[in-house]
Image (cartoon, rainbow, N blue to C red; front, side, top):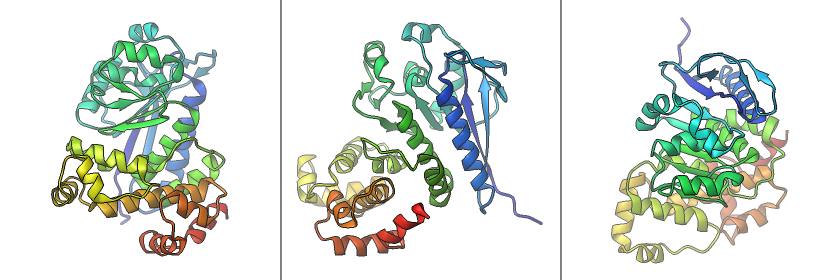
Length: 325
């Protein structure tokens, strides 16, 4: 008798005026993830493009795209909200059914990926109040005016808050999908997607903190601030005593509180952020290993290589090679 594995169900919500390239790229990457997951022991993937009533949708450029199903009461594990090409006033009038349908997923902290203006319904539901978010740059000021309690980050390509991810553009959308592969199916599946589809992306932002996002749902806002600080300053010399002092804690209390919230000691967390950044640079840049070591905060490249091998299980050179074979 063959072993049965759980099936992770993903819904990609399609509406009229959707940006067709965004919608179909999500579909293509999900297909790639599904294809690879089926060839490995472990969870499987099922996904559908869904529309309000299951009907075809017309993209902003006039193309017609068929959908697989409708926006009903089926249970989904992941919701993806692609970018729409329209003004914010039009968004407010479009498909008022989406907000009530989406609300239980937000309330139960299901994984929600919003692309560009797809973040509208998340912000309108209030689940980004007090948190960072990003959106398509042309609509940033309108969103900031309509939802002033959200911390809109015009210069950030990706944000994450309580399992809600936002991507501002095409390249960051691809990285968001790659992060989905990592979270759901691990490195081997994500490696195949990165090599086959996303290898040529050269980012203007760090991908490493995105991989750490799932460790920020503990609810300790002060430690979340420390995590964000570490994730933005990992390339610098970091003294944990200074980090604790700058955030109003003794070193002992800081270490205890950080470990309680994240399940990891501060130094181990910092090392992991640095190694995630190094992994990204090994795949998506042509920099030498010595240069990468400096970029992620290690002046001693020999120590960096030993740490990388201990934590990742292979040398930096071997890790890079598997993406180029």
